[in-house]
Image (cartoon, rainbow, N blue to C red):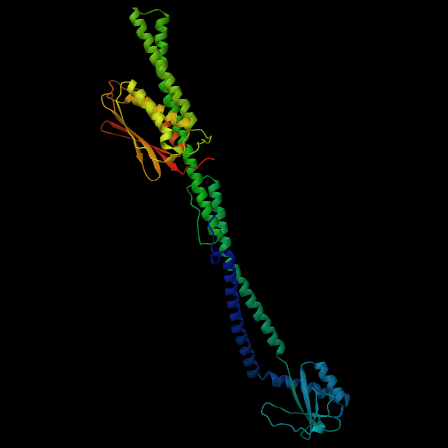
Length: 441
C-alpha cells in the first residue's frame, strides 16, 4: 500500500474536522448568546418586569412588617426576611438617612449618615412600620435564572452543532467505507472488471488503490490461466489428431504386412520404411508433447550461476553448426563474443537448440546458407538464426508446438523469443538478459 502523507491522513483530517466544528460552534454560541441577552434585555425593559417584581416584593414586605409589628429597629427580622427571599436586597431610609442595608446587616449604617441619593434608576417605596413610615429601596436579581437558562440552552445548541458537524464529516467517510464494502461484494461475485472507486489521498484511498491493483492482478492471472487452459486444450486436440494420423497409417501397413499382401520384396521394404518414418514422427510428436508439459508446469526453473555468454554457447553452437553441415546445410557463423554474463538453465538451452536444429533440418532450404549471428544491447545478449524456407512439394504436418516450446522455455529463463517470416526468409531471435557476475571464492 502506498505511503500516505501526514496532512492527507485520516488522523489529520479528523483533527481539522474537530477544529472546524469547534470554531463554528463557538461562533454560533457567541452569536446566540448575544442575541439571547439582547432579547431578554428588550423584554425586561419593554415590559417593566423589574418594577412589577419590586412592587410585588414591597407588598410582601409590608405584609410581613404588619403581621409581626416590626419597627425600623428590628433589623434582625428584616435580615431573616431578605434571606428567605434569596433574590432581593433592600435599604431602609428614615428621614432621608440610610439606617439599614441588607448586604451589611451588622454594620451601623445610621452612624455613617448616608443620605438617600436622587438617581433616576433608584425608586423609594414607602413602608409603614410600627414606629413610623420609612422609605425602602429594593432591588433583586429576578432575571438571572432566565439568563442562566438561556446560556444553558445556547451551550446545548452549540454542542449539538459541534456533534452534528463532526458526525457529518464522519458520515462521509462511513459512506465511502460502505461503498468499498459493496464493491468488494461485487468482486466476490466474480465481476473482476468492476473497478474499485478511489477517492481522496488518505489511508482509505490507499487501501482502495491496493484493492484495485490486486483486482487487476488477479484478473490478469485468471485471464492468463484461461488462455493457458485454452491453449493446452487446443494443443492436445491438435496433437491427438497429428498422432492419430500416422498411427492409422502404421496400423494399415502392419495389417498389410501381417496378411502378406505385398507383391514384391521391394514393396515390403517400402512399407517398412514408411512404418519407420511414421513411428519416428509419432516419437517426435510425443517428445514435443512431453516437452510442452514440462515447460508449462508450475515448477520454478532453477537458473544456474552467471556465466559469460561465450562459455554458455560456444560449444553448443559449434555442435549445432557441425550437425547442420553433416545434414547437407551450409552455415555461416558471425559472432562477436563480448563480456556479458547470463543466467540460464542448461537443460532448457540444450532443448531450445535441439528444437531449432530439428526445425532447420525439416524446413530450411539447403540451397541457401543458414546464418547464425550474435546480437547485443545494453541489457541483453542474443542469437539470431536466419534461413530460407524450403518449398515443400506436399503439406507437412506441423502443430507449431516446437516453436511454442522454445518461447515457453525462454520465458521461464526470463528471456524472449521472436520469430518472423518475410518473403520466404525465416528469422528466429533469442534474447537473454545480462546479469552482473559474482566472483566465487
